[in-house]
Image (cartoon, rainbow, N blue to C red):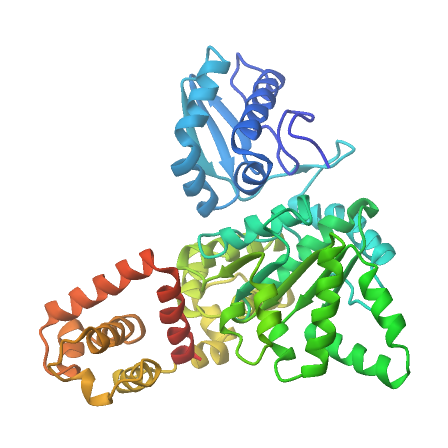
Length: 481
């Protein structure tokens, strides 16, 4: 893989665009090599690879240099977090760059290790081939194969998943680091837990550095049962405990399987005591996985616990943009925005909808339009158009917070009642098309300003309290499903 100081001083996947008449590409590239090196030193390897590695040099127009990023989310993040520092570094490094402009560039060529320039559609083949070979060579025959599509480079980072992504990067670069063993990833279905686990495995097995065993909790259970039946439990134990990294996906499937939990607990202890890395995923945090033995729950929570929240609109747009770019098919921005608004709960379903659109366009040679999108995806869109009623929201929220349904429209102001009532108002505003006065009438003929205040209060509390935010988001996903 090309280094930041490669042919034109740009990172892998980047080329230097047209330079000005007076400054050559080579000069810009050498300056960028020095600046990117300083940035990497200042922010650290993980931070650099997460946010800054994908910067591409653009044209120099008089004293203004354009820097490209592949998505709007990355551009906005880099502009907000590093924009001033980038400008300072360029001004200090050169005598001719005074201003920096960050822009989005979706269609560009990339430079392979041998210097060959090729279209973006071929990136996947270059990156994946060593991963596939390494994973096959070094993975225990007990484990499932790693999917070469799921790499860190193909994972779209946004606010809901940035912490989990950074933790996964850290484990991939320095397994068994203090405080990161075990790494416990949790979140709803289709939000990227499995992708990050495969990315960790692919990164670690590249070049044959370490041995990795990845499997679902269900497969762990079946393998354990098979070992008991064939009287080969010692072989099963030895194989698992000989790997450098053990990754177990969907741990919630071990709930209620006492003997399998017992075996996993002993395997867990043996590996951690030997300085090996454990990575686990589940749909809930360790403390919320009722049905797990207390000693196992405690051990799982003693490392790094990272949650992945439901996607935001901005993150869904970034995911769709990245997938559309990789496909080579032109997908209008209004279609991407339409999909991001309509399909909100599951990234897999979002990507599946885009894949169907792209396949339809390729098969029939027709451009993708908003009208064709509604026609091709009518079944998916119909399912997501299920109308959630305010009465249903009130009932679910009352059940969740253990208050009476009549409290939703009562005059009681006790916090134990008022907070769930505000949550119900907030969800009614998020999930229904009712106006603020209509929502107020459903809550004991309250004024629309009361509803507005409730929505603002809940949104602010979700920003401050991640546990509360997770509770509200879980309730929203339940209502939408």
